[in-house]
Amino acid sequence: MRGATVYALVVALATFVAYLLLLGPDALVQRFGGREAIAEHLGAFSFLGAAVVYFLCLRMTPRERPMRRLALGLLGVFFVVACGEELSWGQHALGFATPEPLRELNAQQEVNLHNLWLIDSYGADGEKKSGWQAVLLNSNRLFDLFMLGLFVVLPVLTRFGTTGRWLRRLDPPTPPARFAGVLGLNLVLTAVWELVVVDDMLHHLAVSEVREMSYGFLCLAAALWCRRESMEPGV
Image (cartoon, rainbow, N blue to C red; front, side):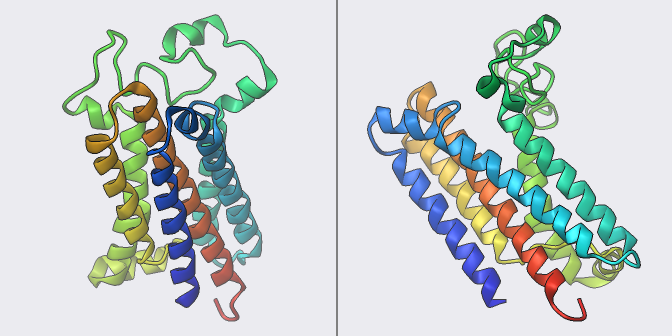
């Protein structure tokens, strides 16, 4: 598991450095953590990298492991979508306009689904969602739950009792448990920065982008670990 420790340490260090950059002048924060800025692109292409690696793992996995192949394929598709959504499917790079019906439904008037009023963190009335809507109708919180499920719940359940034996038969690509610590570091830094650093929309957006960038790094690390395991004899 030493390789997993290296992956975890690299992602943890990159995450910590990224948050430190948000302590810099506003011009640096904007360039690194603003919309269509460095952190957003690093996160998006990390998701794309994770998708590519999971598809490679799928290709390496024998047909005698159908549930494993299904999980790998679903993860690959999910991270392709995550990359596309993060970059609004290339809208800003290619310069195409948002169709009018979508403009009316999208909080940022962009070509993506995660900013639809239905699942944006704010409602169409401009008020921040609260209660159950803040969790179940909030794309940011839903992605947080996905990360917790993949990096915390799945590794824990796989290790113990009847649930663990059942999950091991399903054969999911389970990230190393130590990756959960990196996810925890990211979430703690997000909370601390929101309390101590954030005093305007620029810094609030930057913290959100850095959190998602770290998610991308962690997902890429998990995919690389999966490929490493797939290449081991007898696995």
